Length: 380
Image (cartoon, rainbow, N blue to C red; front, top):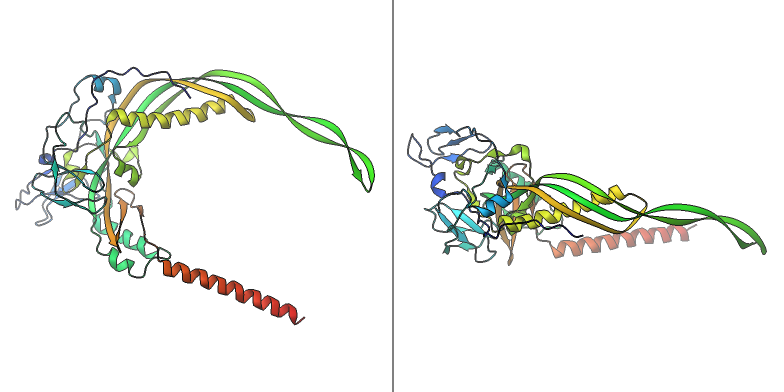
């Protein structure tokens, strides 16, 4: 499929970064400790004295930005702050508060201590955030239940999984909108049938019979198709792509750093231009299906779709996840609990011994059934 080109300015694409850590430190008015976002509410609270403060209600609507305009002009953003640390094992870049000197990567569990100057340059401020609704204790319970239901898992997996430490993190996703105008063309094949006679032998005698023969009538079809795509979601990093979090536009709140208090935030490693290329592939695939439906018929061939894109807009959103990893044997296994829906996904080890014993048990059962059948038939 070919597409009409989208004219884009030659300005370098802006780099996106997690919000400034300085904006996420809120001292408690009661005891001076650091306030943290209370999961499932719209408030921040002190974990020591219980002081609670409401997250200021935002009067700003969630905006989306014209793709070409943002590339042509300096984007609005944040001043560099805090620390961006890159995991030496999986490459994930996490934005930490300035007081945090070292941590463990939530994606692979590796120790992260080397600091890189990832926050330099223009930033794209997150426009929206889905706040955590699943508390840490609930996420831990869901993970333990998930482990307990695994088939053919090693016997001591539950004990090892108890050591996993959940880490609350916001991960980045881009969303794109676009109006599309497509011209499609192709050949539509419609089936029709004719009756033909043939001779066959029946009981040693030739008999004339008839049968239906299918043919295809090809017709050239062309036309135009207009469609609007809203919130095509693209992961902002390879790690967020692997997490595959559920996106719900209704759960988005206008961005406020209060929601991030007490959590880490991953910085996007996919810039806005690269994200659009990924979104465009998904849009093109959907348009091909829609245009094929317009062509119709029982078969199709030589289908081509040429598309122009107008009014491309985007925004950066942050989605919540409880993430961790646990070591079993010599391998690290990762899992995540969706911070909004509570869905659990992860990697798991298999017990070779249990699988072998199950296969042997199945073979013995089949053998026993076969022996009973043979014995029963021999006694008749």
